[in-house]
Length: 290
Ligand SMILES: C[S@@+](CC[C@H](N)C(=O)[O-])C[C@H]1O[C@@H](n2cnc3c(N)ncnc32)[C@H](O)[C@@H]1O
Image (tube, rainbow, N blue to C red; front, side, top):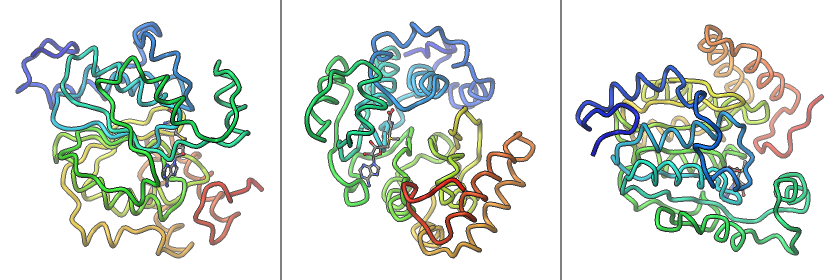
């Protein structure tokens, strides 16, 4: 099969496609390229939506599953699945979530994006309905992600958008990162630059031996290439929930230095300030702007 991105045979794809990624080709996509995936409500920014679609439509080569940690009502999952459909790949999207939404999120995200008001917090029926056009590419996994395992084999793209607590992220990392394919797999850290989740850039500093940052996608996303599979002892040492504030601040200072040439020093300073203003907290929803 030829890649729609390059018309190159698969053996030539990894380097060329990863190089292609650095020039942010998704920013040139017309909105209509995403077709009906555009209609599924999402919390992603416009560029993030384009990235997700582009990754599966043009970058993936079928080296493993696409895993979406934090599917919500299906927005990210739809964009990933639409890309797979266009590329004609056999891969599937494994989408994980607890599939519940409180009234505030129902109003601010779902109703605002066209979903008719409904009772209750269960959004699994809604997600199933919205994702019906791509059901042959998607497996939905309901539950607390930190208590679910992974037996789906190699992972080509791992999207992490449920790292809302340090302990959850640690557990997700231990479960999913060992299944990445060195030299091929990408990790999409959706909350990398979110001021209320300092444990995300801190853990990527601790795992920098295994992951190379490739590209920042506004608002908050950083895409990493996995170049080595982190062993269990490295993952244990990279647990962020065990770190003190001063350990985290040291790692954030290192991240700020690393990403200053990327123009991201101010964003990481916001994260540093976020932690300084919310000492000891390890859950994003507890953080307050001061
Ligand atoms: C920012 S939202 C994801 C947005 C989604 N990717 C989109 O395109 O709209 C984060 C999601 O992670 C889920 N989540 C967070 N922690 C979780 C956990 N421990 N187990 C299961 N789901 C979790 C939430 O239910 C929420 O739907």
